Image (cartoon, rainbow, N blue to C red; front, top):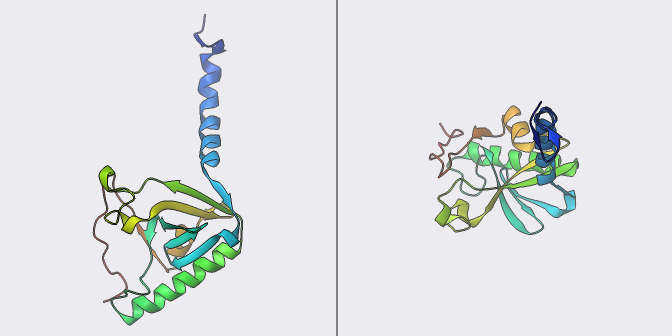
Length: 154
């Protein structure tokens, strides 16, 4: 006799787990209209007026650039991000920032920004910017990030 949980055979529950996981992931994403999204720079957006740091990549700075090449590439990254947003098909997901818990939402943690991911037509915008040479992959651990190196100034 096979085991059952709440009347469901264990084999059926195990088979359903991948489907439930995928459904929960898409349920976490919020569909947003391109008109709800503003671009601050290549890795920072606003969604309905809330400032969001996009995670998984780092884009060159525009305002605090360390060199002319970084500023120019930062402008290109922001312009491309705007194009990707205007293409539509946007899904935004909020994620927990990689900061010590006591600093979440404070200036010490991502300058008080919320963290998240943005997908356009099923693709992460960060992945697209990295593929196009307009950003670099950058990931953090549970309690923080390593200091970002200025890849664009040599």
